[in-house]
Amino acid sequence: MLRIAVPNKGSLSAPASAMLHEAGYRQRKESKELVLVDSTNDVEFFYLRPRDIAIYVSSGRLDIGITGRDLLLDSGASAEEILQLGFARSTFRYAARPGTATAVEELGGMTVATSYEGVVAKHLADHGVDAAVVHLDGAVETAIQLGVAQVIADVVETGTSLRNAGLETFGEPLMESEAVVIRRVGADADDHKVRQFLRRLQGVLVARRYVMMDYDIRVEQVEKAVALTPGLESPTVSPLHHEGWVAVRAMVPTADAQRIMDELYELGARAILTTGIHAARL
Image (cartoon, rainbow, N blue to C red; front, side, top):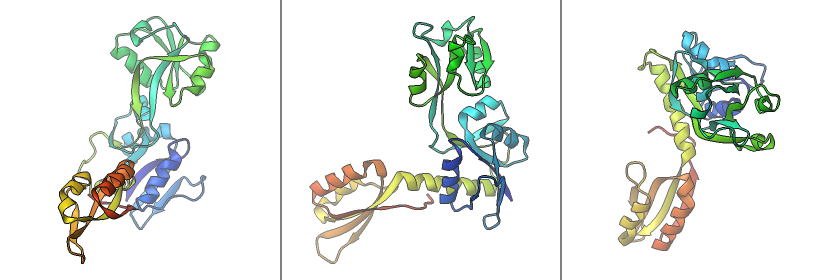
């Protein structure tokens, strides 16, 4: 049975469970459930603190897990990401009062407050900067106001909290983070159950990014039309009962669907329809 760690709370929890549900797996109905067995799919889910997941996976007690890239790197655990999931995206940045610094190289002798001590210490070391790192759990913006540090390093989404605290980001981002699937370094890369699990999640990612588009078009415009809708390999083109017309079906990126429909209409396409994709295997 495949043993999988899933975030039990925070910004990773709900999207992770939603993706697993779309992939055909049972998910817990009560937040107090810590373990759930999906016997149909031969999977056991363990709901854990996101920050602890990399540790459990690296120990070999669990086969794979879903966590954030920032949490994986901060843990220092012997685990690696094997699939990017595209949600819970964030940027990790330095911030301080205006005029304090413009780049990481200027932080020598300063104190940096953060909830991600491992990430920051490594980043400073990689740049040859000798600065102190203070670990705080949450609300690091107040560290500067209270004199605990001159600089903070934290996850930045909108930047509103930083601006409200009179701070501004500077320098290049330490990292870009998102939800990822991880496994222990050195684990069997050809594990059938793991590969099947990854295929299911990849199918969800494809289904979220694409729609199926169908339309009718005159034969003489087919080449121009399929140039707009090439599909993943090649579109399906079928003759219609009405001579001189064909039906075309192809997957197109959801974000481009409306523009493509407009351009197809200008080419003379009619009966242009899009339908959602609920699952996929490519």
